[in-house]
Image (tube, rainbow, N blue to C red; front, side, top):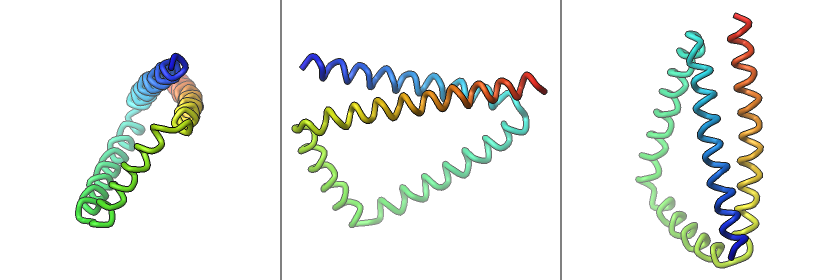
Length: 115
C-alpha cells in the first residue's frame, strides 16, 4: 500500500512538473511575436477540432457504448496489478515528456537570446 502511495505521489509530481514546463514553454514562445501569432492560430485550430470531436462523440451511440466498456475495463484494471504497472509507465512517459519540454524551452530561450 505504501508503494501505491509513492507511485501516486510520483505521478502527481510529474504532472505538476509537466504543468510548470508547459507554462515555461508557452511563456518563452509568447515572447516572440511570430511565435505568438502561430501559437494563437494553433490554439484556435485545436479548439475547433476538439469542439468538433466532442460534438461528433456526443451524437454517437457507439461512443456511449465504448465509454461504458472503457469504464468497466478501468474498474477491472484498478483491481489488478496492471494498474500499478500502468501508473509506473505513465510516470516514465511524463518524465520523458518533461525532459523534451526542457529541451524545447532551452531551444526557445536560446533563439530569443540570439535575436
